[in-house]
Image 1 (cartoon, helix red, strand yellow):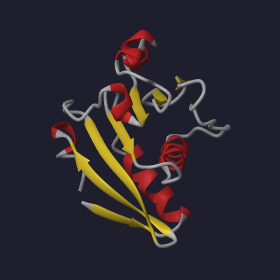
Image 2 (cartoon, rainbow, N blue to C red; image 1 turned 90 degrees about the vertical axis):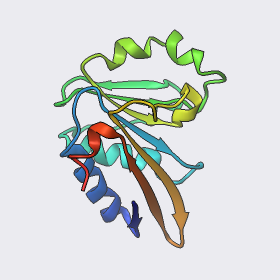
Image 3 (cartoon, rainbow, N blue to C red; image 1 turned 180 degrees about the vertical axis):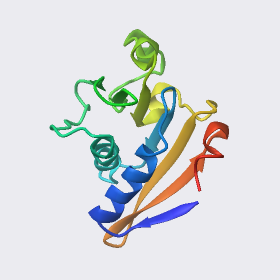
Length: 145
């Protein structure tokens, strides 16, 4: 499914749509080149879940947690990982327990497409806006229109 995102309001609306369906154990796998809006969409999801503070890009910290949300959320940016095994060394499984994962650059962590709770979103630049190509995993089939 392709979703046109001509402006920030459309990106926020997509974030609200995802947040309204997000459950603990889910993965929102955000892929796309630099500057395609992965962190912007993550911020929109976190805001829609009720986070009111700053949302720093986890490019350098790799993992940011938002335990106060329902569901709790782990926001991870795997761009700097050199090998998928590094995700295990970070203790990613421990962070994910009872939480949803927003994963930027998921391929650098080995990918999550094989997980039933994975909502894959590939962001692309299109004219002045973006296009989101969304592929819901099996657990998202009944939740994603």
